[in-house]
Amino acid sequence: METLQTLERGLTALELIANKHAQLTVAQLAEQLQINRTIAYRITRTLTALGYIKTNDNQCLELTSKVSSLHALFEKTIPFATQHVLNWLAKETQSSASLVIAEGPDCVVVKTAAAHSNVIQINYQLGSRLPLGYAASGLAIASTYPASENDSEDIKVARAQGYAYSEGIFQKDAIGIFMPLQGRHMAIGIVHLGKINIEDVVQKLTQATESLNI
Image 1 (tube, one colour):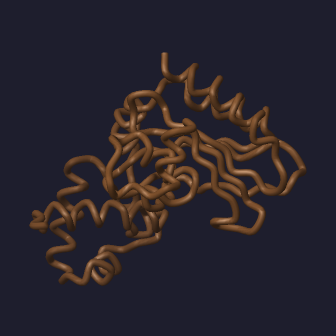
Image 2 (cartoon, one colour):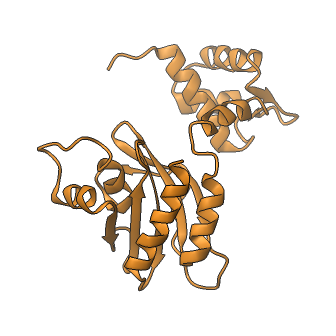
Image 3 (cartoon, helix red, strand yellow):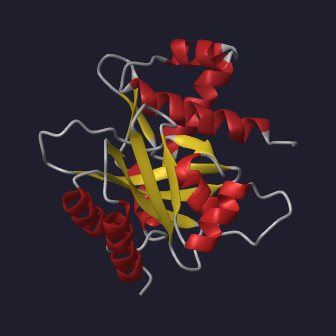
């Protein structure tokens, strides 16, 4: 796929600056992007002029508060009560709860919540990706698309029963149960380490999705 190289480099630079937590100089950025320093300076000057980055006292690059406005706009694409619902779901199931969305061929974690307990937990990390059709979260998202002859049996089962289940995909004894949101390429669910009452979780997921489908 043909891309606009300058824009691609600028966005990649922004991601690198964000990930380095104010520990990246222009010279290091040029090295990371495999470009000469002149181009790196042009990119950083542009991002600075637009207000998205600044240079700190250590001559390192860091994000400014302006990026929060982009995040706020993204938040508007997510059901308003999602975090509240995930907090409730995590507490009720004593599990880690997540909202995942489709982005191209991937399923991406955009919201999480964890139960406050001493029970050992396994968590999805914010921003983590996995292929559609893989694990409970990816299966649930895949089931939101029209049926295809290329669908796996697991996707067909998830679409038929209204939720997806997987076990031992990322870690032994780790169980994932995710349910799609109506009319959206999104799903919420839990990841739990050890035995769990599937029927009870599905019932709570139904309550959670119904509250978000309003």
